[in-house]
Image (cartoon, rainbow, N blue to C red; front, side, top):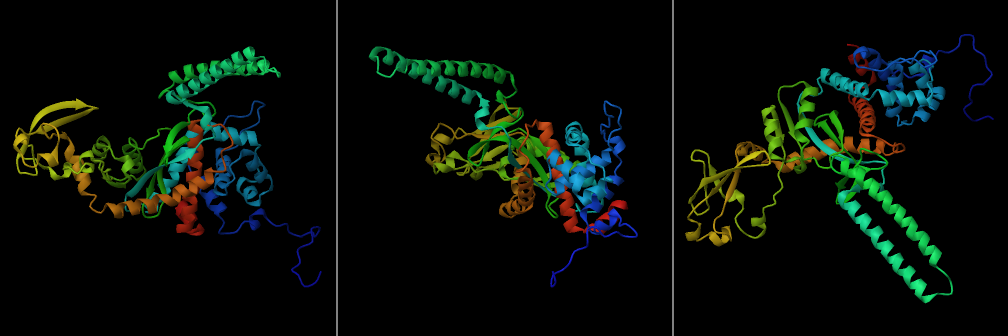
Length: 473
């Protein structure tokens, strides 16, 4: 046909066959993957390279890693799809040297090498650090709930189990009552057998629930998921979700994920110190600045961060019941450190009267004997005395509050930093919920996704050829 661009004849022979390398562009990301994996010292990372039971040698870990990094970078996560791509994808043929492992080999490598794969992800962060991309030493920490395969009906807590057993028990009683009425009325259409079958099925369900309850009571946290064993029920935007809480520390300048961890803790309250310390170790700095939302606010966490050389920017929720009632809140009482006393709005002092231990914290309590004669008492308290409670390390909290004079700016910085990484990971992970997972399996997959995300981000920041030169340097 004339007038159109013509392709080559499939049967045309060539004097000098084209090389496989000719089909891969010079600026292709696959060349970065090849150089990065080849430059790694995989011998000390703990990869399992056992030969086949028949004696056939195993695939080299570098070959398998190249296959996985390429697959996750291009949103090909399934072991069966990776097997097909290795057989027909020219870039993968070039990357693996025309090796095409079967899907079982691919799946077993991912399952058996979770820790080494996570170490490879850390090596890429070290590469970014060597390129001086983390000069600010400032990260934003946030968590996001990732839904598990486990349906909510197959997750049980003590409250949910009690409610489910009560519902089944009530249904059995209702059917028994209907059965008794049917026997008395002798209806034209006999429903007795159908009711008896339903009662039998419900009794079997009751026995199953009792067995599940016995297993649940033996588990940590007294919660059990029947599909994904490590998934937990968590509060997510006002509703419940069964899944995992993925924590990430993201560089505020280039939005690279510095550290990450998959947990099944539903709250972020105890995650700040651990994630900040992981980010500090990954960046290899003496001092680190961290911004997080109010979900991470906890006095003990702020103290641990300060002791570790980590400066925190974490707002606290303003939930004063006195302020809601139109009375004086804590902010109007000024602490005088020299005298270890509080000054009341009317000018009198509140001395320390009592010290107690609560939840691993030493608390001091202050009050004054002059409350009864104070003219501002109706605005202060309805009790006999207005009391103030102060943690022995309250100065740590005071310093943290003083740093948040520009709280709105910090929260905007946090949102701008974490939204893109989490949005990308959510989009990539959304197509992989097809297998029952344990926490180590989810951690391995998340590390591969984080590695692919950082690699893609680096390609956009630096470019292919400069990145290859930097890796080789």
